[in-house]
Length: 589
Ligand code: ADP
Image 1 (cartoon, rainbow, N blue to C red):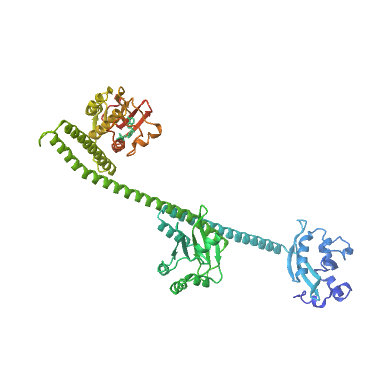
Image 2: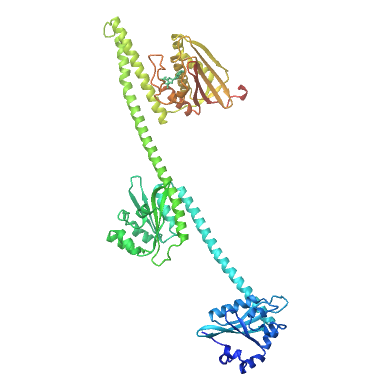
């Protein structure tokens, strides 16, 4: 390995250098600075005249037998020591290495070193020093600058590559997350999950999912349409099996990312369990596998498996990190899509049930009303004695039949109304309604009942020019229902008062009574169909709990509302709000 200085080192031996001889005498006077050191301390054993002049012009020749660094009076010996150390250690020649001066005014030196081996081990170093020329120094500086530039360019390229990769993966994740977030359909979500994985991790991808019943499903995606077609044909044929070494079964066992880089063919063949599947997988091309679990709220809901091409590089730590990130986002999206799917299914079920109920109620009410009307008609015929004389007791019973017939007819009318209001089939003829006149018409329908129940009626308190928007018939229907309740739930001697006022864009109609009141916890429920306050009934002909539900639906369908304020034992105030007519001047407030 060793080579000496051309033409000289061959004739030179360390021993000779220590014993003055021809070679040393020659070296003493060559017009170049030569020195010889010994051992790893680089003990100076020879330095020619030129060397002494160059390095230590004023130092004593007795510097011999001391480390060469000591000879460097005006120079930084550290650089030289590094060069000598390396040459001694490696036995490799160093040529024209720069040694900077400690004193900046001095010129740098160029140093060449030839290690001298004995028994294969370096023992001596032959050192040549010369002052670098101006051109050489400039060249050296240029080389250094170029080296630094090159190094920093390489570093920058590395960091630019890393930044570019990070940006690409961030963009990609952001874009795909958006796509995932937009999709609420489970199938769509699964496809989006596969799609988003394809361009960045692996070559193709397997999406396994675990449903609520513990059943495993598999979806396979390939960016190449022809290969995707082959994989699609495996649908139902290739499903996850409990002892598979990758995919959902592996994720169930490990709950963490798993890379299979060796014997992938075997792993897939075992998992294929079918020659058709095995053949198809081979056609697609299989390489290293990376499985990441899909976990949401500590619950495993599936796994993504990325499959590399046969000759692809193995998965890197960055790939695994990206895959995990994709899996997290996918799990969230899948969970949301499932929840949405369940909510839609429940809503569909509820709507179907509600529709069936309304249809049934509508049909039943209609079918019942006809015979009930007939019963009423025949009761009247008998009561009028058109078919012969009727005894007093029979008249009384006929009266009871009529009361019950009317009660049933009213009930059925309510049911029919409810189904009509609920189904949205009811038509509304919206117009301006003079509030005072409309209230008077409503009260007229129930006034006889007020006196029958020995209640005090405080009349209507309403400005003449208050005009509401709504369907007059339906507003009267609501009013009659509110008044009937006020009459029903107020004990004799109580009071009933109606008032109306317009505020801003709204007309408010209040029906007040000093009746039994409604418990606070029931104030919301009484507007639900068939809800009645237990023990609240004061009259035998109380209804079935549909009146308020129908009234509120009617009010809301006219852009109004129906609310209540009540104190148990003191009375209630029901307020019907309706839009105020635009034609009405605001000064009426
Ligand atoms: P119904 O009067 O046929 O029972 P509603 O829907 O009209 O059905 O009323 C539901 C329930 O609300 C009533 O059964 C009653 O318990 C309560 N309620 C309604 N109006 C009043 C009122 N003015 N005072 C006290 N309770 C009332």
